[in-house]
Image (tube, rainbow, N blue to C red; front, side, top):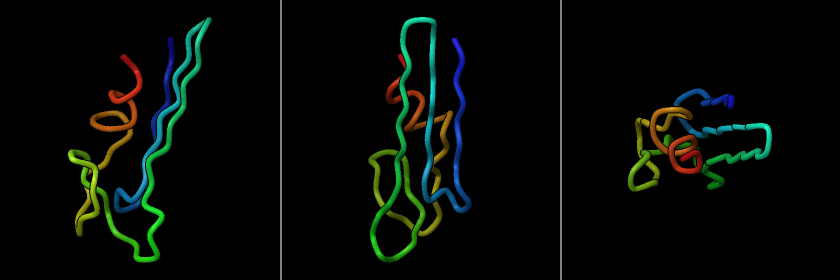
Length: 65
């Protein structure tokens, strides 16, 4: 079992890729609005200062259980 997380500057997007011998999962959370902003993790929403991180809140725990 292995995984890799990633978070962009200002926590505007985040992703996770995980795999085992039998399964692979990947997800990417981003804000596609025309105005750049950070994302809060729960509930997932726009904000001024983001707290979205690949491994500690939304991407990895949301899909890798």
